[in-house]
Structures are given as C-alpha cells and as structure tokens.
Length: 518
Image 1 (cartoon, one colour):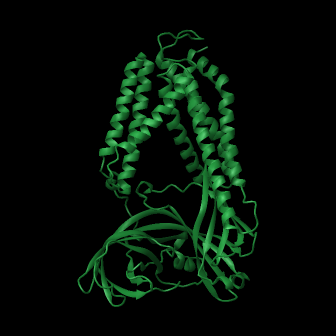
Image 2 (spheres, one colour; image 1 turned 90 degrees about the vertical axis):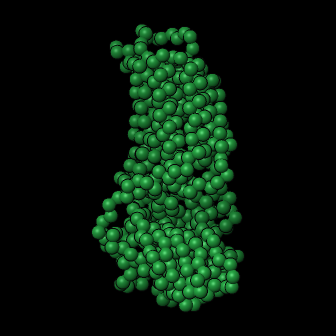
Image 3 (tube, helix red, strand yellow; image 1 turned 30 degrees about the vertical axis):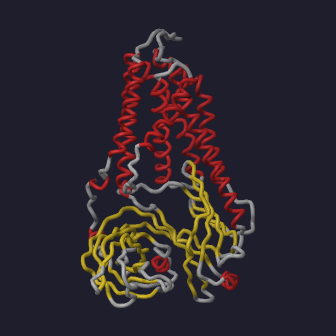
C-alpha cells in the first residue's frame, strides 16, 4: 500500500472514535441549546436572569472544553509519528517528511473538516436554517476549526509527547494574551483600526505557523524553529501595539445601484427631551424604497451642529431606542401610508459648548456625514399577547412569558433563532449589529400602537444557534397593561443589513423641537 495512505488509515483508526465523539458533542450542545426553554411560567425577572446566566455559563464552558479537546486531538495526530527529537520509529517503512506532512494534513481534513460538517449540516437544516445561513454557519465553524488545528499541528511538530504539547499550548496562549495586554498604548483605537489589527494578527500568526510546520517536517531543526516561533510571536505583538492604520477604511467602495445613489436623507427635527438641556435625538426621513422587502435607513453619523447664535458642537449619531419603530409601523401595515419613511437617531455630543441652555426652538444647521444602509426587512411574528403563546417562522421562535409584575409595563419574552447573519458585501466595514428588531404592541380594539423597547437579559450562542430572554418595555402605565393586553398583538419586524454607504451633507437647515412620543 502507498505509505501515505497507510499512515492516513492508521491515524483514522486510532483517532477516529475520539474525533467522532467530539463531533457528536458539537451536535449535542447545538441541539440542546435549540430546545432549551426557561422552565418557569411566571415572568420573574430575577429568576429569568439567573437561568440565562447559567445557560450562558454552560455554553461557554462547553465551547472551551471542545476547543481544548480539538487542540489535543490535532496534537495527538502529529505525535502518532512525531518529528521532534533525535530518533523516530516508523510503523511503516521510512517515509519522507513532506509525504508524512501530506498524510497528516489529509487526515486532519477528514477528521476535523469533513466529519464535523457532514454531521452538522443536517442539524442546521433540521432546526430551520436557510441555505444561506447554513453556508455561513459552515464557514464560521470550519474557519474556527482550521485556525485551532493549524496552530495545534505547528506546536505538536515541535514537541515530543502530549504532555509537552499541552504545556506548550497553555504557555503560548498565556504569553500571547499577556503580550497584547502589556503592549497597550492606553489609547482607545477606532473600530476600523481594531478590525485591521485583528485580521492582520490572525493572518500573520497563521502564515507563520504554516511556514514553521513545513520547515519542521522538511529538516527537523526543532531548536531553531522554537527560536523562530518565539521571535515571530514577539514581532506580531509589537506590530499590533504600533499599528494605527485603518486598512478596512481604504477598501474600494462597491459600486452603488442607481436606487442607492438617489438616496439622500431629509433632516426633519432636532429633539430636546423636557428634562435635558441638550438635544438627544434627530428625526429624518428617507425615500420609501421598500420594494421586494427592502428599505434604506440610517445607522451612523458624525459632524458638526451650528446654532444661530454662532455656537457649534461636534456630534455623533447612533441607532437609538426608537430607531426603526415608526418605519416598522409603516412597513408592517399597522398604519399604512405613503411618502418617505420616518427614522430617528440618538444624538450625542463629543464636545458640547459651554454657556447658557441651548435653544429648543428655531433653527440650527447641520454638516457632516450620515451612514445609510439597505435593509432586508420582514414581519417576523404577529403573536397574540397572552401568557405562554408561542410562534415560529423558519428558525426564529418566540414565546411570550407574560407581563412582569412590580415593574413599569414590561413584557418578558423568550427567543430562539439562528446565530449567524447573511453574507454581506461590506461586512468588514460593519460598526453596528447586522440585525435589529423592532417590536410593536398593536391593539386594534383601542386603535392604539405602542413601540416596545427591547432589553436583553442575556443570550447564549453556539454553532449557528442563539437563545435568549428579552424584556420589552413600553410607556403604557403599569395599571393599564392588562387592558392593553386584551385583544392586543405583538408584532416583531426584523431588519437585516445587506450593504451600507455614506452621504455627506453641508449646511443643512434643521428645525428644533420638543420631545414627541411615538
């Protein structure tokens, strides 16, 4: 038999059962999280939070355990025919280093690539993930496994037994964490710089591990390769500490469709809450390009705001608590209408001016850049507001637990959904969650609609599945919650961002106003 295939067959026979157990654990934790349900029927926030924390702890512990098992299994694969040390004994006839490395890589692909994906694909389809979500989940799992396995193969090639392998992995991890922590500059890097450093560090470490692995199997100069590994790790840490360039910001802009090029936000009002002395929200509208389940909305912004008396302040826009509520009311058909879609953004000032209280009426001028995004939206659920009622839409499940006692009118819900997001053309540029949900409480009998503001009690994610508890808070008085619930429907509208682009605005007049309730 071919020596390469002989070694592959031997390694599969010896490590196959352990790899199969690891794969079954992966599938088991995924299915368990998918079926997890808070056992209580009463909406007790304290008990719900504690249960969610225990669930998160279990999932985190399972993930760490499986990562350790994967590293040790990959190390054992190399140590079946070790290359470090002065002597080696082959159970087949002697084989060259490169052919031996080829056999180990082929075995690793079969055990840690083909086997897990072959088992997990039916699991993902079985829990309702779409083809796109399944592809994304497979990519995330496969890339994570590849990173851990490559690092483990490199370390195992430099040691003589599994004990040394475990020690080397622990020391390498600790030195990496300590090194990155110790070389911090004390400055908070912008999101783009952090993303650039992350991708650069991963690429350099993986490339260095691959080169060391090839060289070790070619000439077995273990001591030299240990020195090179330590020096390379120190160089990567030093480069990370000194790096300040946002590579992602310099990626070429994708060509925009004609509909996106025509999107220009119209600024409506700058709102100051009654209890605050400075503006806190910006209301704007965008053309209602909601055909085919898509709509364009704002997601970020920055610039300068100038008042009539000459004062100015630097500002930043972020999605606020009411970000998509009014747009969702229109899109879901709760209040059908035509014309531009209304949106609002939370406004914060990075350097507010000093002096008298800011005017709450009149006009200001707005200059800066607003980030827009095209969202794919859908009405995910329409659920009667009754304790214990559940609904499902594809992989998304929702269960109403009930109104929370001894609190302002708040509704406790449980959700289970896919833990992946659709592929996007500008995912590397993301500075905000790719997915946002708007919740509406609709009572047609009373003819009133209220926006509910979600607050997470916690969520746990594992291998394409996410489970969590949320409290939906509303401005309905506590004593009227029962009246509102009678005949009411909870509507959940989901926005998935598919691409984003920027619009610059110069000296745009903007009205000032008081807070308005949606």
